[in-house]
Length: 362
Image (tube, rainbow, N blue to C red; front, side, top):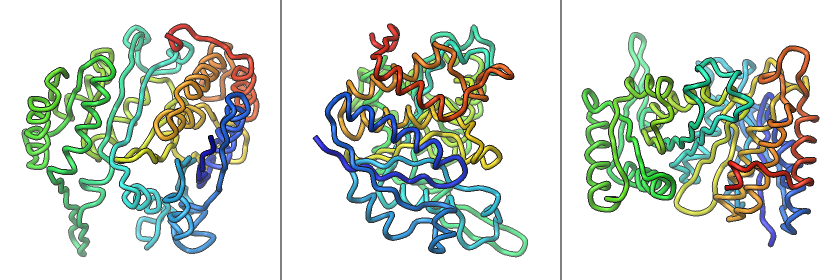
């Protein structure tokens, strides 16, 4: 088979880490006999510099035609003026909205090698395997915004339809995993959260009675994610809360450089990106960790292309690289780090060798 993948390198380290993921996907194609066609397009600050807007029409058109989209990162100090009419992040927000990508998936499964890199005590991290599902196209980020000389406002608004569709995705993932879903809101204060909780209760009762549903306030959940992360299977929440909680959850993995993400809608097309930012301070130095972007490519293979064996092979290759101590600067002891290119080659070597990690294989 043959698939069309749009690559959006973006800004900062984005081009470096997407280059690594493309190399891995090309190796997957050779090993499994799959055909991947890559189309590189502009987004974010790079697009602003080139054409004056963060999401050019050509980029959006290409993404609409693609089977999947691989993104690096957007933003950086060059475009950080908050009063600017156009900002790199607008391109990503618009792309998610235009493609209807309302469910953001962020799996968190700490690798044993990285436990020491996390500020959380290792005994709390052993056995953690959770999936955060964040609503991605509603809430404060997309509500009406007003600015006056002495005040400003952002409208947080959700419809039942918007809540139902992301909750159904989260319930479905929970049903396929360990059958537990934690819904996070602020129902003691916010009307949108009361609607969210009522909708979750109704769907759980009427459509997913086999999934154990529990509710947590977002402030309590921020504490529980660190103090008892093993207790959670699938966590679902609205846009702003999810943005904050998923960055917090990255601490569990030891490094932002290990966590992938997928943004999905109703169809198979999705947007895949590492959760880290553009890291302009290390851009061009060849030391960025490519593993999160490579793992995002594995999610791309699984969720958009339906290539389960290929996805697992990539995840195994990354796990074997970590097992072998092939660590970038965010994970390694001083003086023992490898660079982006060496880390990419490590994944390619383990992919070719068909390495095995029992806990992933099973």
